[in-house]
Image (tube, rainbow, N blue to C red; front, top):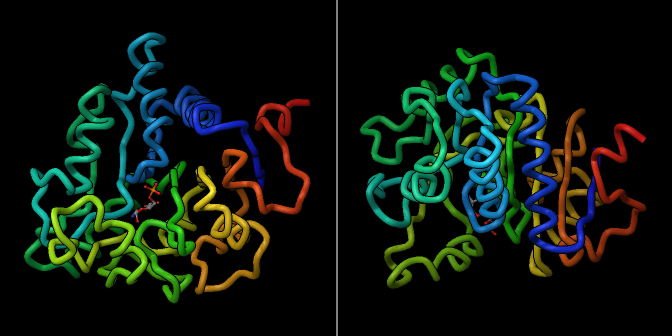
Length: 255
Ligand code: GLP
């Protein structure tokens, strides 16, 4: 696991974007796993800048998003479909048929989840999965207690996640209680993982994920078992880490 601690959010975002762009330049038909949340927004902005100013080409890229709320239509401004469209898809040259976000309105959700898993396999698996981390150590919507071998399925959201999400909805009763999420096992099958975190409120989760015991109580801790992981954090999110870490992946790999 490469842990990279950057000065601030912008530096964290640039470092993450450099990793994604590097993988994309090496493999134009990259299969990219995407995350929502405030954390990857800076990385997405940088990818858009690279696309517009440097010609970074997404036309052959396939994307799979980690999760989506159940019962919220794609046009809803709090759906993850909407989030991705507004914050990334509309500004890149992705081919719509290669873009996948779980369908929270699927009539038969279990069948949909099986299809999503199959679809990822059809494209040869995820090359690189971008992850944020919840304050309780969740990845995607794999809440504490999630099986570390789990696949795409419906999860009931944790009390903490509901409280964290309440700010995005008019009142608490509207906060969705269920989500479709890639499983921990699905995420672990990605060839590479890029986990981002910023801000003091993520410091405990980052500490547990990187230096704590591997436990379903902190689903993110499973990344310790993965062979190719970058954890890129800003100084605040990395403030409780005890190990000695790097500040650039290029230094780690090429110096
Ligand atoms: C949600 C998403 C996660 C994300 C987390 C953290 O729960 N399902 O994928 O990592 O929020 O969000 P933020 O980046 O806004 O802190």
